[in-house]
Amino acid sequence: MAINSISTNHGQIQRIGYNAAVDSFCLKAGGQKVASGKFLSLATRVWLNYGGNPETTGINGYVYFEIHNKRAAEHSVDGTYIRGTWTSG
Image (tube, rainbow, N blue to C red; front, side):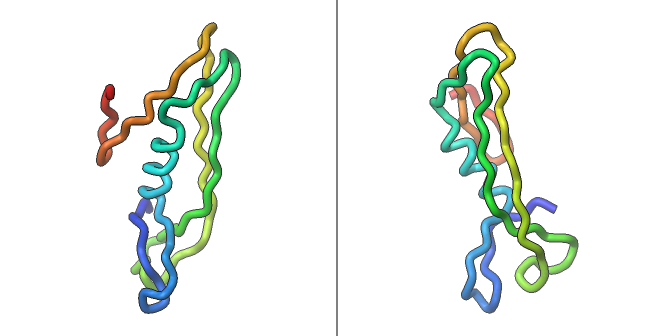
């Protein structure tokens, strides 16, 4: 399940959630230029919730994001993402 970043171990350890990883990728990808036939990728560690209370149970995992440019020309990435809605900004 997708979760926001949380703290575990009685607030001692900050865990990056999937939602925060998406936001981070969008911020880092925005404005990047991807050549024709190439791709842009990011791998990051996240805290995965498997149905219980994510502050007490969860597992570390990795998520990979990629943007593939299948166009014949270079592509500039618009990484604007606001609370679940892509915008043209």
